[in-house]
Image (tube, rainbow, N blue to C red):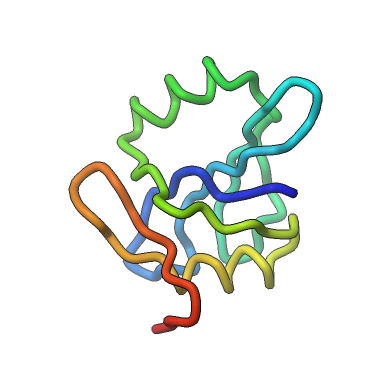
Length: 97
């Protein structure tokens, strides 16, 4: 199941950028931006995606949520994300803004 591995928060959380890990024989990551999430970049091999995550200073997600690749699922996960520290965000199940 896909899961959000990193997030780059915008002022409106629903408009944030997300890095989504895909489960496959060779793990890959796609990037997308809310609120519609219809434009995606990738999938990219993990090493390339990691360089992008570091360059743009995405926050790694602690307890990464499983998501469906549709706008409603991605928005629902994003509103449950909290900044943990300057390098990480945390997914908090059951908590919403």
